[in-house]
Length: 297
Image 1 (spheres, rainbow, N blue to C red):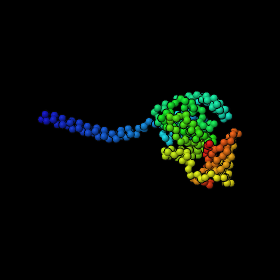
Image 2 (image 1 turned 60 degrees about the vertical axis):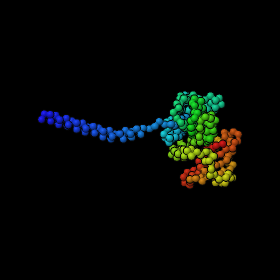
Image 3 (image 1 turned 30 degrees about the horizontal axis):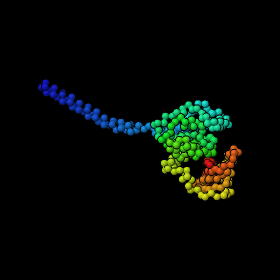
Image 4 (image 1 turned 45 degrees about the vertical axis):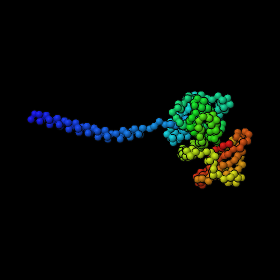
């Protein structure tokens, strides 16, 4: 009887052991999908970075929109010695740097770019192209093999010219179509919303391989100005007297409103006359006044 009791006890221990093992296996199986989910959910390192310099906050605002749109890393370039606090003093300092080609020192000129495929490069326009701190960044980093997507904020224009200069300075990088928006528009009350929508459209055009020439399609032939065209031009350019713009002809493109492309004579700051294009957008009736979008040679 004693042996029988020992056998019964042993069998009970064995059965309990089996049940414990089975429970552990079930728990392990139950936990496995959760572990797998956690492994799948782990974000991959970003392959893109937004590098930008912002003078008055407008470019920073645009950079944040780019960063969010592409889930990119971001680096804000910082001057070792900031520009003067007044507009006129800053313009004088930038003019001196451009004339001497002595570019300003940056606290973080060297950026670790090896792990990135795409660099979104942002800057304000000064004297028709990117601001001097960008030259310092370009001199300090190798963009060979990178896709470089320029974006900028400006007073009146410089988007295309700055992108063309980038192509010259970085022949081994793939410099794409550039995005630009005026300081006046992005700092308006609904500026972030407007810029976000336009950035979304820009990325669609970029992915479709569109060029500036392709995007100019859909405009009518250039023609002499009618009274309505002149009124739109006067309203949209009233804050840009310093450009000395004289409209010569115009073409239009009907969208959700009307795009105007004026061919103009420009004598900026009293300088020599040059021909330039002025793009103006007139919203649908009741949705705002005509606004200058860009001035481009």
